[in-house]
Image (cartoon, rainbow, N blue to C red; front, side):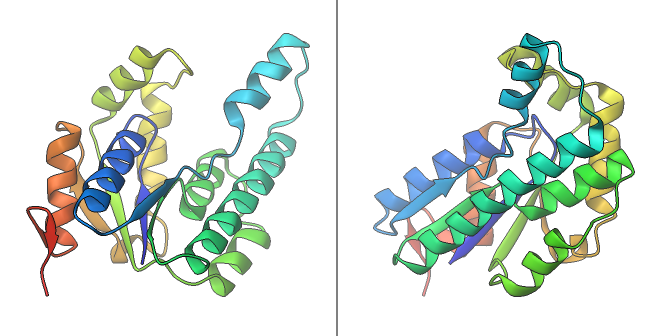
Length: 194
């Protein structure tokens, strides 16, 4: 089974994804969590260090390529094991980012979405922009504006696939979010329901 977690930066996807993998594994449902990063933090840091300012479309192309490779690797991991694969920052993330930046979806993302196995379930972590902003600020690894987070949320909601996503209230503690996910997955306590 492939479970995808989507949502804006600061929605709590990574924290909840790791906890979900732990809880499923402890319930005898081996699970692995993959982050599918785009390398944005590293690229931004490197550009700042060398005082390089490449055009946004070039940065997006690099990030899209890195994320696509990571998603394909995650799919290969899913095919080669009997574990549940929980994916963070799937291709939908890159499509939403492109929409925010006014960049077309291009050909690679739609092609991969067409040919890769569809996730079994996609959760959208709905979070207030101010809550997400506070979380991003507290980790001090990157910065986001409230305006960007609002635009990112709207871009996710405008995706063609969004009506098929299960919306989870991510304004709460990670344990509560994971409880909701487990309930949606048909999990009661620590065991899957038949």
